Image 1 (cartoon, rainbow, N blue to C red):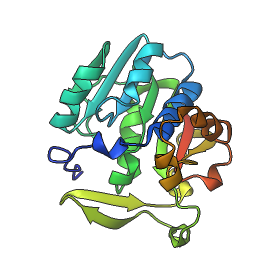
Image 2: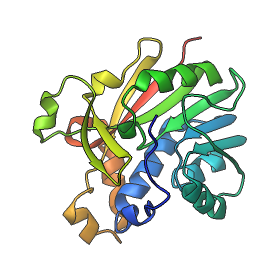
Image 3: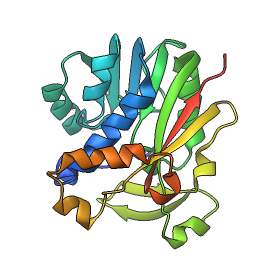
Image 4: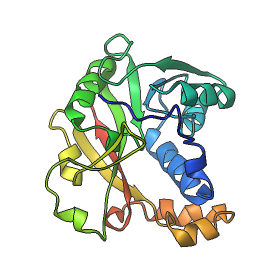
Length: 222
């Protein structure tokens, strides 16, 4: 894995004026998560989604490779244990998490199977897995039938894209596809203070073919 360069990149600034989308994603994850006992978030960044997860889970762990992000997360999180590592060799015992979450990270990974291998290892039987992946409903990117690198920025910050089916894994049962991003545009940024609009994004989550960020809900085998 060639991790994104978030040491010299302000990831918090990327969410400026995107309060509607931010709230919608946190609400959707909360809706899909259930009541876990032990939660792991992969690539939690500065703790944006983790701050919700630690409220509903008895134990919460977050991993990220960026020291800068982990320092920011430490300021925001109360009960979460933080670890610095990549996602292909997680520093956890096998079969201990009943919820594993990975939001807005998969577009940095060229081979999802390597991540799924570790998810299957550290998850308990029947664990829930929530993973978000990019989607392009109104773009020619729909014609791509495999995961490929589409652009680079910030040096090692590579971006990959593939259709939803390329992010599936036969070892995990797909329970549903949901989407966010109804207000992830110029209009949404202008109306960013009207956070109640997040309700419309979440309530139309099953209309994922109209959204630009998909949430795949999996179940590990029993």
